[in-house]
Image 1: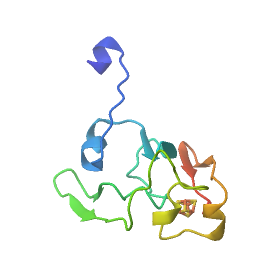
Image 2 (image 1 turned 90 degrees about the horizontal axis):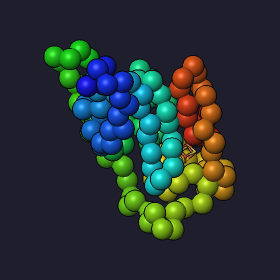
Image 3 (image 1 turned 90 degrees about the vertical axis):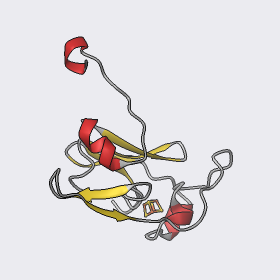
Length: 119
Ligand code: SF4
């Protein structure tokens, strides 16, 4: 259908093992903010949140290696999100600046955008 009718799909999911098969471009969001935008999320995971809500997948189509990563803490209220990086209360790599200043989305490598003070 995409080829025949020249359509663009917006597919929202939490399981990367599904997204992998149908997406050309992947955006990762947390509490309404874009944290990461990439052609293929599976090539290189740079943002601390990227593997959180789903499975990290590697290997060939027939040999999936799955590793579930459980984030600590509760999801803050979207009505009253944290200052700075919205992910900082749950981030294992949070620094002082993370609770004070919101990171901007930056192109770290070609077609790979990340919003994180680590970069
Ligand atoms: S900006 Fe800080 S808190 Fe947010 S993901 Fe990066 S390291 Fe973690």
